[in-house]
Image (tube, rainbow, N blue to C red):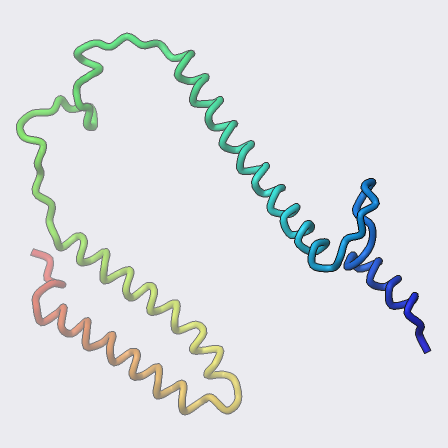
Length: 156
């Protein structure tokens, strides 16, 4: 049968009780766990601080070392090597966004088919998951049919 000293020895080994460093003050279980918890966050905070300092030094060095000679040509808006002429407003076709949106919808939906295939292969889920997936694919088909009927898919 184990005595009390064996239990405290295990608690000391796990870090739930004991003496805190050189001060000799006893530490209870939650305090020891909290100190380890915040110590791990202090490492993350230190790394974040080092990253911010690195960026500040890099941007500061770039600002100090670059030549500053503003000329009228440098202050012009530059677009693909062509001098800007006319208004700054350009008409954009909405159909490009519609095609991109439809692609994203079907790409995300195809990603949902992979977990469905793994669940469908598991025993006991065959009929239920098959019905659910056909309902899901039916919603997709209705949406695609609606877009086709509205003429969204016609490239004009």
